[in-house]
Amino acid sequence: MTEVLGVSVGASAVRMARPDLRLQTSGTREMDFHHDTVDALWDRAEEVAAESIGVVLSQNHGERSVEATGVAYRDQQQFGDIQQAMSDQRLYNYRLVPEARAALAYLEASGEIGDFGTIALYDLGSSGLTISVVDRGSGDVLLAERTTDISGSDFDRLVCDNQLAKQGVDLRNSVGLEEFTTRCRIAKEQLSTSGAVCLPGESGVILISRESFEALVTVPIEYSARLVRDVVARSPQHVDALFLIGGGARIPLVEAILRSWTGMTVVTPADPESVAAKGAALLATPVGYAPTEDSAPEGNGVQPPWNGMQASRSGQQTAATELSGAPDWLSPEPVDRSVTTKRKIRGAALVAAGLAAVAALGLTLGYGGSEDSTSAPADSEQPITSVAPSTSRAPATTTVAPPPPTTVEPAPAPAPVQTYEAPAYEVPAPYQAPVPAPPPLIPGLPNFQLPQIQLPPPPVIQLPRF
Image (tube, rainbow, N blue to C red; front, side):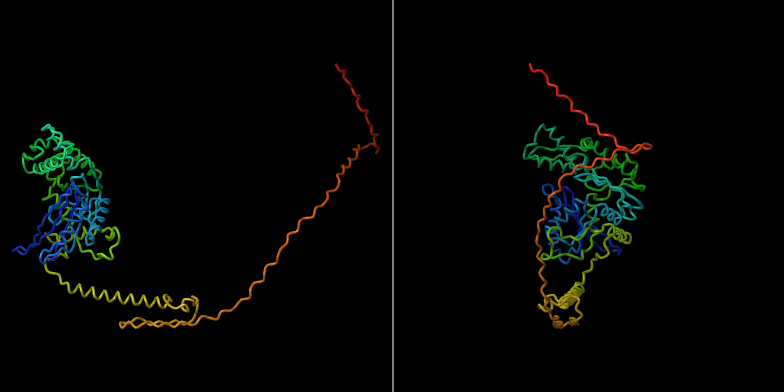
């Protein structure tokens, strides 16, 4: 019997879900899920998820074996972190699906989505709040908004501060603070179904009622309701209903405030913290390429990001035909592995034949041949024949014409020697005064020359000396 595994990676916990197909007496097939939760408070959640998946895949459940794994991711940052963690664990047979599309696939399969067309997902987890608007028909995320101003960890801190103030004890620098914070988180989870909680411990007794807890978290929940109204107002399509998922959806005050503030239909599915893991299991399909330890690439060996939209559509179509929403290939019948083995053998034979053809082509082109074959010019018109590879692997024969005779060209004549001659120096001619211009001629007067008048030199005046 084949099985699939769905995983959602939260900041404080890793949730795993495995669908269990049971044939009822009426002949209809009903699907149930086996749940597992692994705390990830002190380690990176992505690494905890990869280690947990490796443990589940290594376990033998009799005739059952996990054939496909789907892992839901929150954003691109977590997408890369999960890939790296899975590569470190040498795991490659898995699919990464967006959390919103995984949640939509489960709501389709369980029938809880009803007749609503466009829905909004209110995912309140330990690390933050994500509000997404998803189109049911196409599976596209039309609008998404995430904030860390409200989270389950903030609720834990509010409970912890309230209890420390009541007891008058300062554990901020004490070793027991971690243990006290863990019990506050457990008390918060129990208040979802109880009116009051009392948890004794070494670091003090935690005693809190639901009314006190709701008084602490009313303001942040109302803040989240304003965010929901803003996202719904900016949505390109009309939102028909609001679905609450994540661990924070179990708090009764969350549903009450969102219904009163938004005026929308608010639906809280069963086990809201496991919705993404269940949807990831429904969208999981076997990966065709899984590198071995010898051929696994360094770092990220996972195939390119998976088109979650196509898988979501296929999962929705399957869910529309069957109540369970299980993938088409998932069947309780045992898989005939002999057919798969024969296909692998035939594929190996085809690959060997292709490699032999490539080798023959390399010999034809002259790679790996003798020096005579490599020295033949590329534009030679000599005939070259090769024998195609056969099943008997006969060596390919190659006929290469001998190279043409080489002719000795005469050595070029030496260039003439050029000598340098210094320029001859010519003595410049003596300076000659310019010839004076002829005297001007006055029209109408006879041509005569005026006598040249020479003025006497001026007298020399000598001043008396004192």
